Length: 124
Ligand SMILES: [Zn+2]
Figure 1 (cartoon, rainbow, N blue to C red):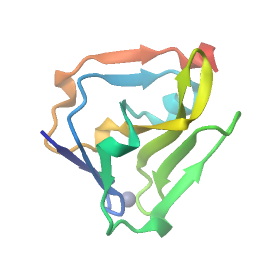
Figure 2 (cartoon, protein in one colour; figure 1 turned 90 degrees about the horizontal axis):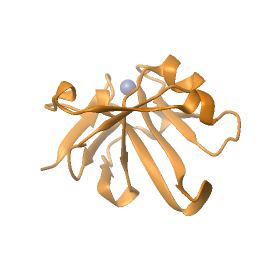
Figure 3 (cartoon, rainbow, N blue to C red; figure 1 turned 30 degrees about the horizontal axis):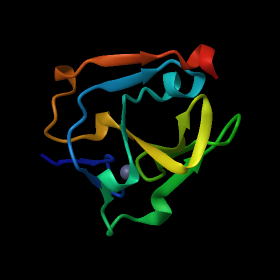
Figure 4 (cartoon, protein in one colour; figure 1 turned 45 degrees about the vertical axis):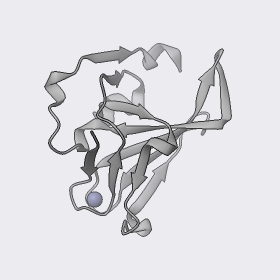
């Protein structure tokens, strides 16, 4: 079953092919400040609404600059990250993954799925 999500002002809206079965809380310096719970998808599993306002979709990069941390500059919500997938501890730029902020999902019970902790504080 598909699940829809949106930032607070609605400038970024998307539909996921399926609901997440788990979500990830990352302890790295930026994720812990942003407070997102991540659900990981391949780009073909997400449809961004063609009516989204691209001017409201901002991106922040830090450290290795390999991950694009997207946020809505209209309402300030953390929306999604785009990164290479990781294979044998190396980035695979041919196979990007998208981490959706599961807190933006609508009609989805976040408390019903387990939260996995990713030790980003020590990993990068
Ligand atoms: Zn917004």
